Image 1 (cartoon, protein in one colour):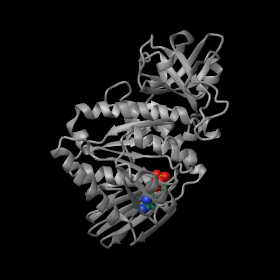
Image 2 (cartoon, rainbow, N blue to C red; image 1 turned 120 degrees about the horizontal axis):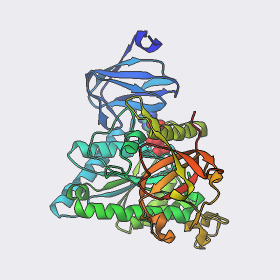
Image 3 (spheres, rainbow, N blue to C red; image 1 turned 90 degrees about the vertical axis):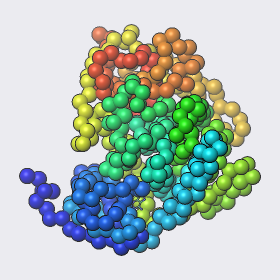
Image 4 (cartoon, rainbow, N blue to C red; image 1 turned 90 degrees about the horizontal axis):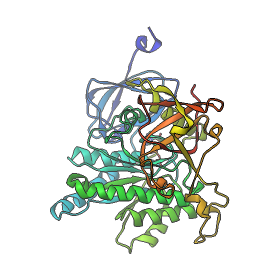
Length: 435
Ligand code: ADP
């Protein structure tokens, strides 16, 4: 019997409009049960009497009306706070809801919301709250993640769009990458485009290009789905607020026809955004950062990325997966990577074009380069022209665990059995070691 189950649980009572903030390390486990009252984690309600387990998480259980929790296990940090920006977040939701109602009556697009701010101010958490509240009111919002560092939906390095029609999993955030792996190749796979790098500034031109592809795909989806169209979407971003960041924000506002811009936790950014966009039919809203938001250091972020990748192949304790290892002939696949970026646009004076290599693929002939790489299988036909490959969305991901140059074979780890669904494969900069 492990230590956890013999340990006694402790009671935490929360007054209305209070939250219990906690941090759990990756090698630890904390269980929380709602015993009485009502409570939510980033907008998603907890069920009474159900035990939720957390590992490697920083989060808060918030209550509007008061509750009693049973907590078991050791948190790295835990405390109760009574100052939260939740009321202003709820009011923001109510304003968006009005836009949705109007959209419904006039058969128009619902709000197109963009959330910007520096790193670690609670952008993703706010997006979760807004998406959950919309869902609770019967909406079907699309969550768009342009945050390539985190890979909150599938893998790091991707930009994604997910139509949220089911309650968000409070233990795993936005559902784990495992659930997306299980859907590889099928239509329930979230819409993803592979950028392949962690930071948007590494290849701005490519980042803008994949964002535009994603926006076009969302527009087509909304054209055929009334519920999605009226609910609109909420875009989460990467926290870049320097000159390159501003350039990207501008691009995203235009491409996604953003009409509500939420600036989180940064006065100067708010003032700049207000000046740049408020006369362009964009409502610029300022919200403050929650005192509970924790800064995540480099080590935590790397750990989070590794966990995401591991989950994609092996699943989570709740939904375990066994990936398939297979030998693939060099000739059966075509691996591509984006051409070498000699001077990325981000390093050039604004307005000057970077080399076109930034959005051109080159074929990888030396398979040793792929060893330990995460590769994206592209939804492209066998005879697709190479200039159009980067515009293909992702069918799924595989991992190269071994390369045998003599036999001309690579060993690939894949979440689904059988032949790879497509031939064209894109390599990014992410490497991983199975541990
Ligand atoms: P950003 O998207 O701006 O980088 P996040 O929303 O990811 O910020 O928040 C950073 C970290 O702080 C995350 O681990 C998140 O779960 C945590 N966090 C956010 N709000 C709270 C809160 N009120 N209490 C405790 N932890 C929080």
